Length: 259
Image 1 (cartoon, rainbow, N blue to C red):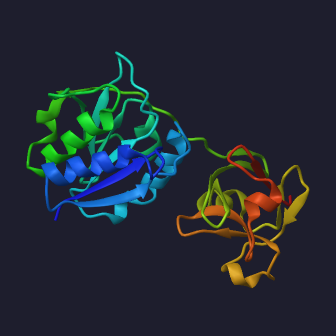
Image 2 (cartoon, one colour):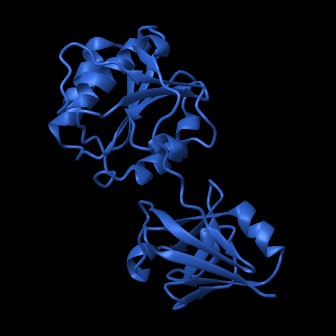
């Protein structure tokens, strides 16, 4: 059964979502529609990319991902379809693909406009229509013209200065845990099994160990853990770390290793 996913910065109660789902069901029946998220902060392609990057590989081959984030279109807006890792991604030329993919997509096309195109609601009249054409067996290359390049936004990476890693909070999850851009690989490579301190909010909070599970720490205490995608996460056992520690996606996290 074909699968189409939706990721938008709409409110889930907006008519946009119902209209898009209705068109998909009407145009390509028997398609499974999966909502990845409709709670992306307005225009925040970084948050959308984080969710898609860390979830798409769990979908079956041939899945089509519609990404309707930062969709304010003008006369020069390009609508792109790319294939990567045996899946399809339909969005705007707003830099999001550079945040999702580590490597260059196998194919990228500028989707042509269809009958009844509306620049006010392109998720419906461009992206959803293109998704259903793919479901019906039309090749991606036949939906427009091939493009050699498109806007690329480079992911924010942690910085290294001698024995210090300076990273950033890049996502706050539903438990209010703060996920950073510090990878397990970077931590191990720089740390080389040395003692360390994780400094939060200008050294106000300090952590000196990495948990294997959340429950190793007393309820209400701050902890650090490498999560299922091997990124360092700051949490509070049974608590809301982001709220209680004043963390958001502009917060920095430093790790100082003993020399």
